[in-house]
Length: 200
Image (tube, rainbow, N blue to C red; front, side, top):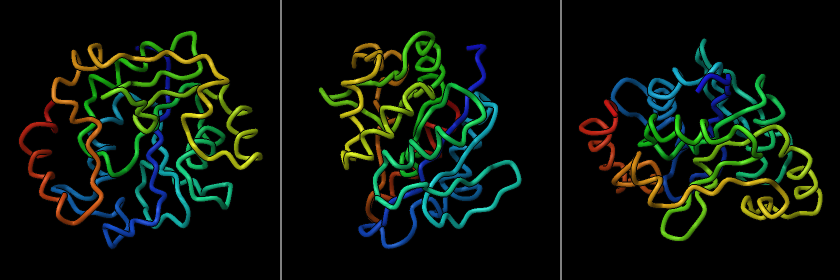
């Protein structure tokens, strides 16, 4: 993967079930954002943390405020794409701490001539572990203007490379990249992060 890209970490959402902002959850070595940045940033020119009123300061990270009032991952994607210094970006939700660098590298590699590269797992798109180009901005803007906030709706109007589950499995056999943390009880999964994901 030789093309420079931007990592977009989505820190939006109300985190009602978790009870606190998920991007500030503690893991060994810092926060989930620190962990994701530490494992993935080597693939990218820059890292953006995108959300509304994001309380997060690190010298090597740049925070970006959501540019729309609607609460939706699509707003975060749009805000990140508009702020990115590169044409190619990779979007990850901040509550997905087990994303595999080798999977990310492969998805970026597939993005040569498309607007979006999205994995499919269990028959569903995984839009928050996906590569996007700035060419998607006009379609996202129109969708937001119309009040359509579902991320996968934009795929109908873009050139999309779908990555089948069997292909994803080659780079992430356990599909741990798509596990997200929603409740305090699920924080126990962070032990798995220490044992298996940090080195992959």
